[in-house]
Length: 190
Image 1 (cartoon, rainbow, N blue to C red):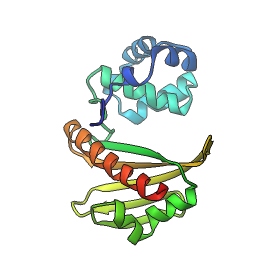
Image 2 (cartoon, rainbow, N blue to C red; image 1 turned 30 degrees about the vertical axis):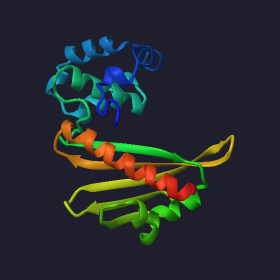
Image 3 (cartoon, helix red, strand yellow; image 1 turned 180 degrees about the vertical axis):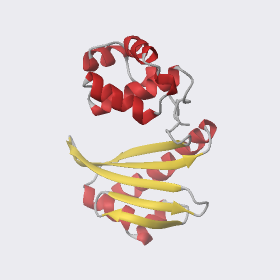
Image 4 (cartoon, rainbow, N blue to C red; image 1 turned 45 degrees about the vertical axis):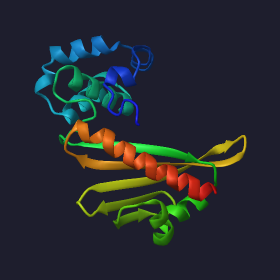
């Protein structure tokens, strides 16, 4: 079973990291945002304000914004700005990226580990495959070559299932994708 499928911002990003990377604590940022009325702002406006007014790095703008929205009840943990949720699962496969890519991109091979029919809607060769499921769901598969480990090449494969209606759906989808990715790992490494 997937452990903690949807985490609150403060559980995913430590207070020490926020302070070290932004110069302020999470609560100091939240007080500043409250002071300018940011609860009435969109996600994009909050992030842009952090960037423009406080020179915060882009990744940290997003992180602080998500944390603020969660803390003020503007967004549930795991919720995207459009109100939907997404589930992601990943696996590290102990083979070269080209081998893993073949198992992802070639329909016959993909069908051996992926137990649902998909329509490929886009592809960046060797990197990403965008797919639509029969129920209309959108899925992104990405591969990343990792530095060689002690036993040789490694490739991370990540699946992101987008457009889920609720946080309750996240755990089930994460688990389904984790099982499929374990099947991919077994086949590609075997």
